Structure formats: structure tokens, C-alpha cells
Image (cartoon, rainbow, N blue to C red; front, side, top):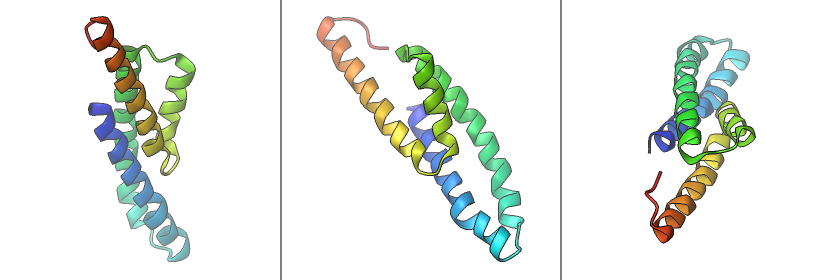
Length: 105
């Protein structure tokens, strides 16, 4: 759940930065939006990395896939796609654990 929330928050903040902040900075010579949102995205991205690493270790995600999910927070809209893929993996893992009698992750 932590990963899902932070993935959406990072995605929305990144879209605001790219869609609103960057055009204002380079087309209207108004850097204040980038100056405000940029550091916020940076801090949130660090939280996203920690949440991704935590989730990846819990569901035993391979390192290559973990890195790809981590990079998803740097490309607009991709964190939403990654979140959907990871949510599907978690659901499949929980359904498999329920079928085998194992405790869920």
C-alpha cells in the first residue's frame, strides 16, 4: 500500500513539474514553479526508491526488475504503469500464497 501511494504521488508531482513547471521556466521565463516543485519531487523520489526497495525485497523481485521500477519514477506517467504491473504481481503472489496455505508476504 505504501508503494502504491508514493508511486501515484511521485507520478502526479513529476507530471506537474514537466507539464506546468518546465514550460513556465523555458517559455515564460518563470522558474519559480520548478524551484518549488523540483526539490519536492526529489525528496518524494527518494521515498519512492525506499518504498520500491522495501516492496521488492518483500516480494523477492529480481534486481533487474527492481531497478526498472525505480527508474519509472523519473519518466512522466511511467510510475503509474509500473504501479499497475507491480500490483498485479503482488495480487498474483497473494493468490498463490492463499492457494498453497503459505502466509502472504
